[in-house]
Image (cartoon, rainbow, N blue to C red):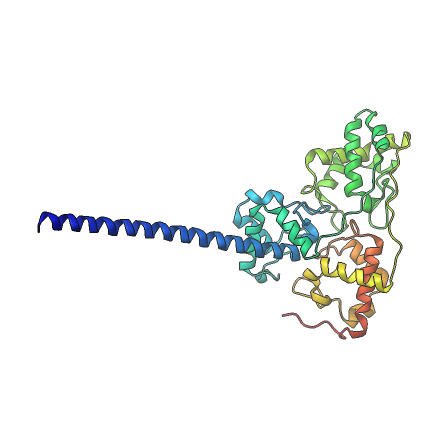
Length: 353
């Protein structure tokens, strides 16, 4: 082989090697692009799944609603932990099992997409998409605290803590326990001398942390940190001091009950937003919750009972208590919508697959 031939062969080998390296680099880029496209598609699908299945409890931005915890902190959690929680639910909480094999409605692929979305930390995009789908939950009904009332509280011994407790109470507790702890049909009074004598600070803290089985009182450990819980304890045990100086929160005003066609339409909108993920489209039921659109249920359940079920939930089931952040008018509107289904409702609930 001549020297010229050797050089030609060497150059050819180098060119082939370079071309192969370029092809490998391009293939790596193509794989990276494909992986990014797949990830983006999963996040998009997960966003829509979140809007339909999760937003009513965890909020449009993952902020959490009432005792239902925020999800903004799951970004750094292990993927398998998040997957298992969605698939299997959490024992002794309102978190249902959503996996098909666990009696839920989501396939493993859908749960993977939901996990991808939760870890993507794109809550602004999620909130925008939820709004586009008209699935943004109603705002929690809260008692407004006038600035002068907070000023009155803050001058007391331990006033800053009491003011924080009062603010947390107004935002999270007043809808069930009453604006000034007087109690309601949903929850007992907290602002009484009898309760202050009967329960120690440790007792109150335990109830906040653990809830009360068989009642609507859920555990608040996921929604309130330790300092916030202690502020509420301080408020409840020291409420007598607030009474002495005349502290009163404005009573939460609710709209009057209305069963007009307009209210029925509003009830349908709320039902589609909050209830279809469990009770199915048009109330025909699902693997998670029973059908409501049938003569058996509608004929045997009075309006008052329906409203109480919506407001108070059903202990031991996946039915949460909506009374903490739906007004009486909202609950009446949902009831009116269910009543509007009666003329065409089947005699018994259809069998679920």
